[in-house]
Image 1 (cartoon, rainbow, N blue to C red):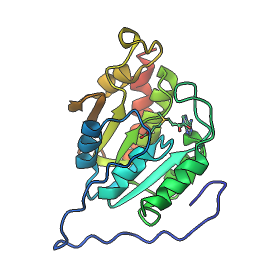
Image 2: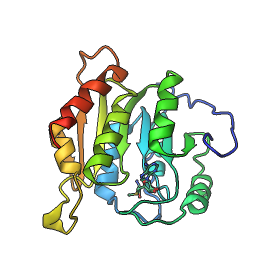
Image 3: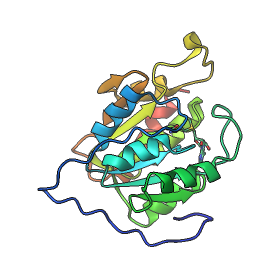
Image 4: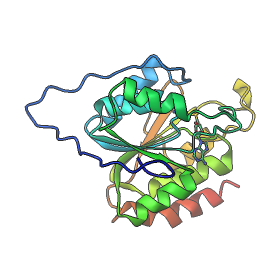
Length: 218
Ligand SMILES: C[S@@+](CC[C@H](N)C(=O)[O-])C[C@H]1O[C@@H](n2cnc3c(N)ncnc32)[C@H](O)[C@@H]1O
């Protein structure tokens, strides 16, 4: 665990070639992520190192951790204007233990904008990221740029709530706009994803490029 909570040793999960594929866990935890979205997300994350921005009560954390090599889960656990401003820490942390995911998840208990630059500074990189924080344009642009600072070339970036906007009663949701600007490769329900080009030298070099791309949306 990182952030303002106690530091614990993280034991990397070793996945041997002859091991059977891990079984996806769909936890009994309140979430807007549906089962079919969870299944698609799990296939993207299987065997990979994944960043999660927005964990809330831990539904997507457990979906990802059940099949990924390792999950870095970032949330300040104080909520937001869309999820509701409430403390989710006690429920989230007990769910991680309840589903036995302590060794598969590094918990970064803090704000995305503080925690992700710390990870980048430590040289941490990811095979992919799941973005499910606050859904207004400025937040989704920032969170996407933060995720891209860690994702390796060829890695995936997935957003929840793609397709939601004023026409679905979600007036300031801007996931669709940001994901479309990046490039959507697939969609299941309100989950969409794209891939970082293979020819990028490193994920962190995408940050200024991505910010410039998003500037054109404003
Ligand atoms: C929609 S919920 C996440 C839902 C979760 N992925 C699930 O499977 O149910 C959004 C979460 O993002 C967190 N959040 C929003 N903005 C944040 C920020 N800037 N830094 C850290 N956490 C943030 C909130 O605390 C909330 O728990």
